[in-house]
Amino acid sequence: MGPLHGFRIIEFEGLGPAPFAGMMFADMGAEVISITRKTVSEGKPFDNAISERGKKSIAVNLKSPEGIALILQLIESADALIEGFRPGVMERLGLGPEVCQARNPKLVYGRMTGWGQTGPKAHLAGHDINYIALSGALHASGRAGEKPTPAINLVGDFGGGGMYLAFGVVSAMLEASRSGQGQVVDVSMVEGAASLMNMVYSFFNNANFGWKDERGVNILDTGAHFYDTYETRDGKYMAIGPIEPQFYQLLKEKMGLSEDLFGDQNNQEKWPELKDRLAEIFKTRSRDEWCELLEDCDACVAPVLSMTEAPHHPHNLARQSFVEVGGHLQPGPAPKFSRSVPPVPTPASRPGSDTDRVLSELLGCSEQQVQSYRASGVLT
Image (cartoon, helix red, strand yellow):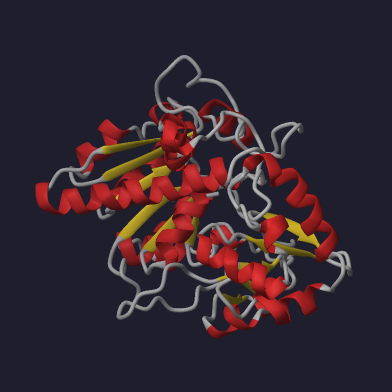
């Protein structure tokens, strides 16, 4: 069983980062009940999204007082609630923190938005690219002389959003186990993305590191010739990152790089020239040939794998980093534990498909009661 077995999380269905946090809880063994407002009939196609795996799905009419009453009954036995709506939405539904914690004083109430619950932009719409723009992370991402380039929506939505929501909620649940009191966790993706930039801000604030507030000119942002990707003869890519002198020396030895040209690793004036020279060298062999030469040593080199290739790399296979869920290969639960081993995730439930079972098992509703709720529009 996973380390969060026995904990119950109520998740209000949303997009992207909040469901991702719910998936993290489910992957670790928690019972996650996702509340949706829609059902999908058996005859219609259903997108088995990774972030919905391992959860139970119930469909409740959130505009019905009786539906809200059912949700509050579920909340009474929950350890945490997570939601990703704009500020004020849950309050207007009658499910704000004060109402929910009056029913369950130990409830941890996890709220995630892009801007946070307060501040001049709190009421505005936005997406990952907007949030990381305000954090400083987007300005730092990209190559020299080119426009800022986001790392898809990993930094704001998932790194700065979903993972901080999961971490914040677990932290509050640990505190509640001691204090007996729940609390609200206010997660801002702007602040999460800024937090992920902590080391970079530290480098920038310390003159000894020489970090410039520019793109593509620093040691970790593709400015350095020894921290970048290079195209190979077959149009694929290798990623290199031998920052430490001993690893850089090994790369030089393995690749036969001349000491005269590549000897001064940290001479930033020579970085552009050395980058051009490495680009020429890497195009002399295929990616597989470079892997054979460099991958099994401390030169800090790895092939740039596509999403099709990554699950089949020997290292990922050995660690079972990807698992089959519902006939599809997906990234497996992470991290790994020595004793509390989570089971392989179950496929995503069809929206609303667990309604009857959840109401029966958790609230003791009879089949007749459930049918009555459905007939009166309390359940959707």
